[in-house]
Image (cartoon, rainbow, N blue to C red; front, top):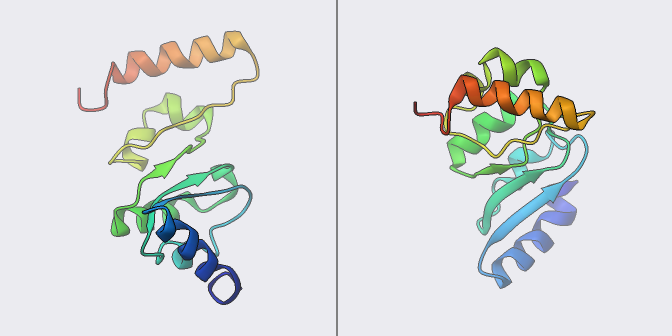
Length: 120
């Protein structure tokens, strides 16, 4: 449905603006391969990445060299050190902490694991 009913309009708008990104909420992984074929697409913004097959989406984004924005990993993935293995090229991450104290804790632990950048 995306390819036949929406893709041409997305491409029209993106092209008219000289390229741009698409934002999507919900389960979108069934359409991502089609969305990633848009020639004017420059990035993809995931509102609810946790509802999708992120290994597949990340693989497609690496293949197409399209940045992903707003990836929401689990607390466990952030603090286990596995986040670096999942997203080797780096992505902007969002962690929706249930409290300010939890946000401070995760931020501190994440910083202890990775320092100021992933290369260290």
